[in-house]
Image (tube, rainbow, N blue to C red):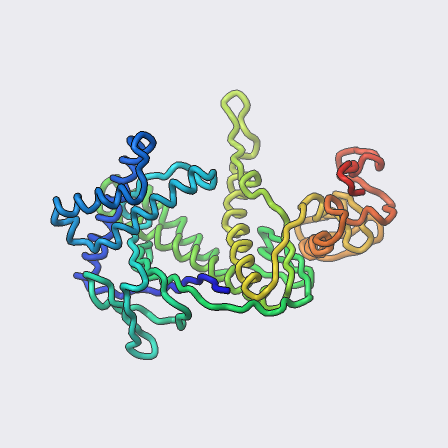
Length: 410
């Protein structure tokens, strides 16, 4: 079997090469937006698709020299991106395509067969891009497989090149070990083995610098160069935070994928958990500022990113990621199965009111998550044992807590 993997590196372009990068990105953005407007206006009536718009692109290049100056494959790749965006929209996987904006994810792409790389020394390599030439990049890890396409993109930290490679791969036999993982805010990842992983502490220092820089932006005059420079500093700090979070999740997911064959996660509705508490004018929300802070902390923890990274790393090693219902995982005792909200004494302490079992609250939840992946008692684990008391803190009698699912499970 073959798998697709990306290898991303920091480019070091010369000033004239950086000017060409911006020209390529600008023309590709123009082609994408013109094609989007054309399809939004006439697409249904004339059944426009990639082939018809590629023919229009040929006529556009013949009419304007500055469009013809940009390599044709990059513009064709922009049309393919638009065609894929419409396919996703009609399949219900994405919203209607939006126009591309300047300085927001500026990028252009080449087919892999038209790009050549060479090694310069132990730390540097170079890539030859059509109509641009050889551009140096910091070679931080070896590439594998056959290069299928090459994307040059701009972010607040500079220009980068990403190689999408197709690698021949044989998945090994998975490990028989199973681990449950509880995702949280104070403790980013808690494993059923007792391990607890947190985001790097330097993220807090960068957050303080970012807030200070945002206050500087607020004091600058709109449209001034000083305001643009201050905004660029905020964007760089935000990009550094995102890169550090991504690195943390990559390392954690890789370590888990190497040690375990099955990783069990809660089925979390992150969009619902981070909904705004503003309410309406007639019925304003309660504790709006606190809810906004919690939403920011949840999104900053990157729960969805971790699940995505863990899934492909587990599949690469023959393992799998499964999800189980999250109901009552933090209120169920991992030792006796009693479900009671009062057992969760604080954010970090779990002490069962039935048997007295005490553990870190996130570790206790991770153990419950692990147990649910192959048991028929998916809604509430532990009900097969006789609880001494069962209460969720909502004044429900024991017979109603929890109610039977009526779907063949007790």
